[in-house]
Length: 290
Image (cartoon, rainbow, N blue to C red):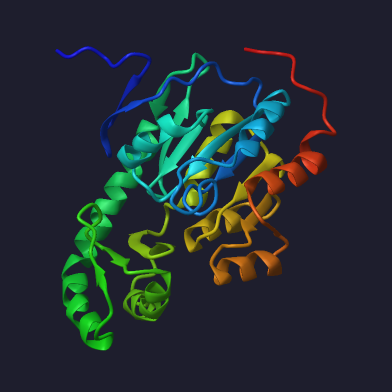
C-alpha cells in the first residue's frame, strides 16, 4: 500500500472517486457567519486560479468573528483537488457539481455528506435514465437547428453540453428549454459555456442549505457571490442573505441580481468589505471554541 502524501488527507467520495486534499487546520469556531463563493469567474477570474491577495486578508480578519467560507461550484471534486493547493487558505466546505457536499470537521479533516450525496447521486442516475433516449434523439435535431455551431458533450455528465464560448451557449439555451418543457422534474445548470441537466431537487441552493443546517447558521448571516446562471438557485433559495454578482458576470445574472435586491461589485474583495461593514463587524469578535 502506498503511503499517504505528506500533509494531505485522503477523501473517499462514493460519487466522485478518491482524491487527496491539502491540510486544512482547525475550524474557526463558533460558526456564526457563512461565506459561499462560486469558483470560476468569481473567486478566480481569467486564466488564473489564484484569488486576489486582498481576499486572504479579508478572510483572516473575518475568521476572528466566526466566519467560515467555502466554494460552491459546478466543477467536480477531482477538478477542485487540483486547484486547492494553489490557495493560501483552504475553504471550510466545498459544494461540487452543484449538488455534492464536503465539509471540514472541527479537527481539520474533510468528510463527505454521505447520505445527502448518495441521494443526489441516485436521483441524478434516475434522471439520466429517464431522459437518455430523448436526449440522444435531441442532439441531431440540435445540430440541424444550429448548423456551424461548435459544441460537444461531456464524458463526465452524459446529459451535458460544452459550447465553444458563452455566446454560443446563449444560442443553444432556447433549444434546451424546449426539450425540458415536458420534464418539470429536470433543470438546466448553466455556467458560462457549460450546461448539464440535473434533477430539479438538487442544485447550489440545496447543497448550501445542507451546510447551513449542519453549522446552524441563519440565512441572514449568509454571504453569496457568483457570476453564472447556476448561482441563481442559491440566490433564490436565500433571499434574506447578502447576495452579489461580479460586474463581469453574465448579463442575465447581473440583471437578475439588480432587480431582486442584490448587489454588484467589481470583485470579491470589494463585496466582502461592504458585507463585513454591514453584517459582521457590528458584532463582537468570537472568543469561544468547542
